[in-house]
Length: 322
Ligand code: GFB
Image 1 (tube, rainbow, N blue to C red):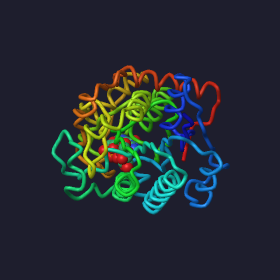
Image 2: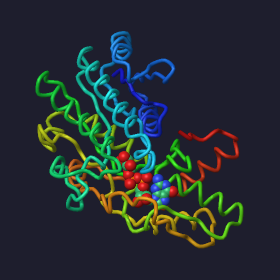
Image 3: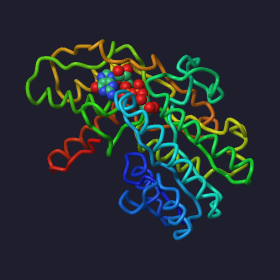
Image 4: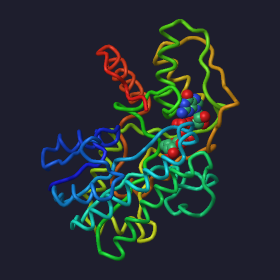
């Protein structure tokens, strides 16, 4: 198969590219940001007509942590809506039968019952701090379902929990919590600082999945027979949760990171910063019943991500910081 991976330079896209490359079975099509602007409908259509993939993985997105979502809401909703609409429409226009788009667990209502089942989608108000991003990701699911209903395509969606791993963004403000804290605790351990401040109360709970596990899950879902995918989902609720189904408090995560980076000082909670949603642990029963479970524990994944971070620093590579 000729597979177009949209967003192959990001943390998720590059993990899926690595996974598919190791399989060695497919011809992989990629395009960097300079070559193809995914927010430009004409450019995306022209690219798809020229390259004619059989399948598409939609891993491109504007993403960021709680502060980036609050600071750039227009960018988060506009870019993600445009990317999803352009890629999904161009896939249909050029005869792509199968497509997989990647969303996020923030699509679910803030007060959804835990663990969150796929059926909770659109049953209540969203967490305000990331509503624009979540609306764009919900629209992407509904685009896939609508093209399937109207045009008989086979476009699928997976909703991973909070992801981390090599290729993540370690920016002090815009990053998600795990890479943000890895960089902060590392700097504190190196400088001999006595304290590290984390945002919020430390009590929110999050579920973390290593991006290589997500890549394995994405390829697994992409490869399912249509009958198996359709039996596991519903036509109007067609997405699958990807995660462990277990979570950890932000303070306990900070303690794990302190341990891994060798920081021995005090952890302080800055309660003037937002907590965001109190909890969002996923019900992963559907993926388990299909036969998929993650493998990389948080302890091992954190250690591997820190090793990757150190290697990048030693090699003098600029870490993503947007
Ligand atoms: O990872 P995060 O930014 O996003 O924050 P969300 C998770 C929790 O960690 C929040 C706390 O309670 C933060 O207040 N936290 C503590 C920190 N210290 C830090 C820090 O230094 N940096 C950051 N970033 N957080 C995102 C959504 O929500 O989840 C996105 O904004 C996306 O749209 C993503 O869905 C998966 O988990 O709250």
